[in-house]
Image (cartoon, rainbow, N blue to C red; front, side, top):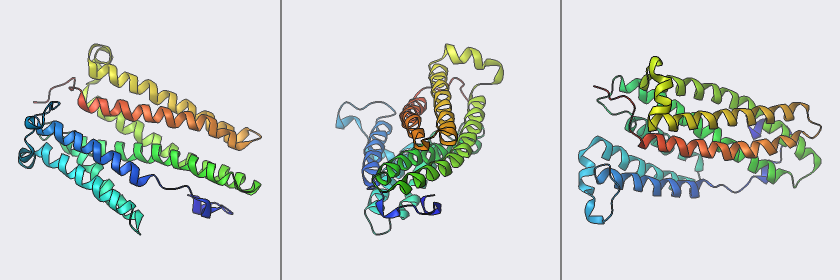
Length: 259
C-alpha cells in the first residue's frame, strides 16, 4: 500500500518486528505442544509430557507443524528475503484451522475453511493497522508532504480494512451458528462459558467497529487528517483484546457436542 502513495518516503520505514513476533509465536506453539503432549492438560512436570506421542495423534502433528512453521518464519524474517515468511505463516493459519475443527465434527472442512479465512483476515487487520501506524510515526519526522502521504496511506488501509471486517463478520457469524443453532443462541450466550466469552468478543468487535468508523470520519472531515491516528491507536489495543479473547475461545468446551 505504501508503494502506491505518491511521494511517500519509503526509505523511512520502521524496523521490522517480524523476528520478535515469530519468536513469541514459537514459544506459544511450544506451549500448545506441551499441553497436547499431556493429554490436553497443563503439564506440571516434564515427566507429564509424552513428547513421542505427539507424532501419533492428529493434534500432536498439527502442534508440531506450528512450532516448526514459526521457527521457519523467524529464519525467513532474518534472511535476505523476509517476504518468504508468508509461506510458513500461512502453514500456521492452516494448521490452527484444522486443529480447531477435529475430524469427528460435522462438516470439519467447512469449519476449517471458515476459521482459515477468519484467522487470516484478523492477522491482516491487526498486524496491518499496527504497521501502518508505525510507518506514519516514522514518516512524520519528514517534511509536511510526509503528513499528506501518511493520510493517504491510512485511507488506503481503511478501504482494505472494510473488506477484512466484512469477511470477519461473515465467517464469525457463520461459525457461531454452526456451533449454536439459531434457536439456542440467546440462551447459550448467557448460560455457557463459551457463549459468555463469545459475547465478550462481540462487544469488543463492536467497539473496534466504532473506533474504525471514527477514524474514517476524521480522515475525511477533520482539518488535520492525521488526527485519525488517535482512534486508530485505540483500535489496535481493542483488536489485541479481540485476539486474546479469540484464543480463549479455542480452549473452551463447545456448547454443542458433535456426534
